[in-house]
Length: 283
Image 1 (cartoon, rainbow, N blue to C red):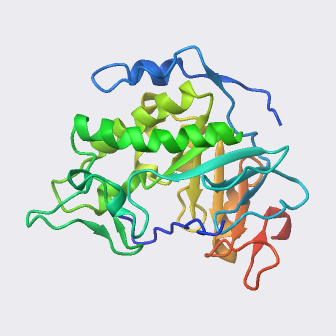
Image 2: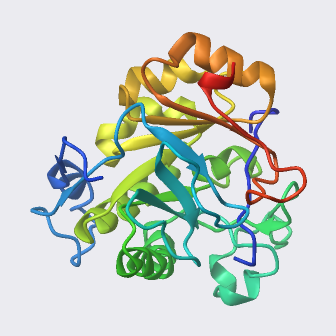
């Protein structure tokens, strides 16, 4: 994994736009051995509005600031009324302590039979290494996606696309990650939801094959990666920076084209001590 990787975590407490995209390509890509019969090729989805006011609220929901049109919240809470809402799900790993909610054989295990953990977050990694397991894991994640759709979200953000980079050598591959996310993309489109790529710039070039509509990139300004996302997704990129220099870099390079916000590392709700939210207007 990239040593600079930063992933925020949702708190346990917890518009329409002009261009419409069809899910035909994503469904076609997923229509082989791992296709989902519940997904429909004719459903259209709406990506986030480009270069819009943006807020990342995984630490808990709060009233979006003036000018915000796009909000990301955890799938366990309600969307923000009247805005474009993106629903966060942890798709490639189990939430801390939630490994017991998964069938034992769906947890990734090393050569000694021990569950492989993302030590930074205390999360068990899921075994997406075979088509059969990918389909079984997707069944649970798709239930969360159903909940996002029922609540009125417009899109879904599946986290940990890059989990394969943290697995012991030989256990998972980029191909496994792309095959699994293709399943989720096809299903999300079938429910009328757009779907975003979270981080993982090395796979951005495969966005059309996988069926992805936009990107959510953490610290691409700080680590000079924003161009990789823009090359693949155009202006359909949402950037979260966590320090002043990262925000300045992202804004200087891309502030006229894509959505950029700086948040505190804990993405705390507004009004809480330590809450930070800045935009390119503050640079």
